[in-house]
Length: 338
Image (tube, rainbow, N blue to C red; front, side, top):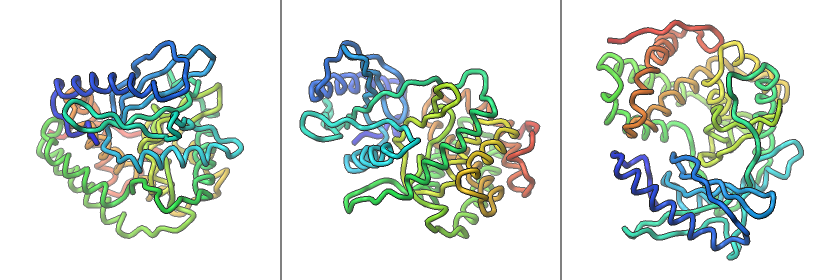
């Protein structure tokens, strides 16, 4: 399997994209599709293409470059197809190949393997110009319903998905330690390390039980939510795994204004009821996910300018987190760490 996060140069990323295009064309032969066009979407944890057909059906083809094993990718689609039958839940459904498999393997020139999957395309629009309170409240309710459905899923003995928690956070920090000087000053990096230490202490003190922990989306930022009018739909489940339910909610809050974070929480609690120690736990996961995002993007030279631009706000959030001051539902002023 191939992990794009380990590629440091633009040349390596472009070579991987070329290989992925070949893998996509190879994979399309294994499906019962009268396809007419293939459109490149983006290169990220997976390399994605939209497939047009002679019918009204469209599909999402993914070439997996996030280091996931064949068993983990298979399990993702099994899970989605299981929760997708619940009333009120719409998720991308995996498609079986002619060989009755969800995952196809393609060997590239260097001898490594690229895995390919096909899913039903979900129509909808990404938010442009901000969300309405109704959309945000509905999003909170949708996340709660996803967690309800996930809690009822019974995995098979060979089900395999990653765990997002202490160990994964420590692994990400190792990568950030290597690359942090691309976008952080020495003092800025010191603050990140302090925040990471506090997060690890809080994670170690958390308990898991069936109402707060299970299978989650784990990457539920607004770029992975589309809307059909006021109705939100979740997409891009490639990172789904085991974790705290409030981790999902915190990941969505990162893309919202403070007022709308409260609206999101109201929507969530309208389905699942009041959450225990919610602001403290959400604040921990908010900063954890923010740092994880930087860990995941810092090795890509195309991302560095954006990371630098975000630091005045990131450092203000870290400052308040370290002081124990509430920040989730309050506006903050950016700070410069020289």
